[in-house]
Length: 124
Image (tube, rainbow, N blue to C red):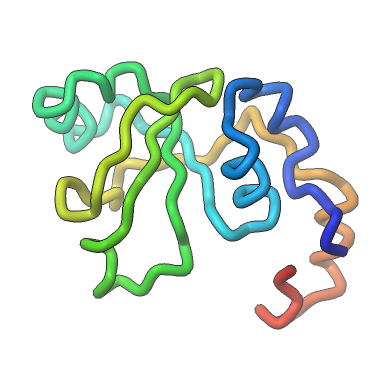
């Protein structure tokens, strides 16, 4: 089960994504989400950090406890997977800013492996 990739097209969609980030996303250690560019929070953040205008996605940990978000670092990436900017939880909150990555396809093998799990103990 450790070799099952969550997204079977991640490397095709984001060819510039660093291998360590690919592995962390595929193993569910980190999460990737699409940025809602119409969100007021995103628009305001771009005014303070103009390079975020080039970001399409954000990579973050969904394992961090809410009271620890200030210590987290978010990786904003462009459409090809290139890093645009790192932003700390002190600089920005992600709540209300994210949507699903509809262009990433969850592999059938991954879905099948999860269908036999009904607890978090099945995480790789």
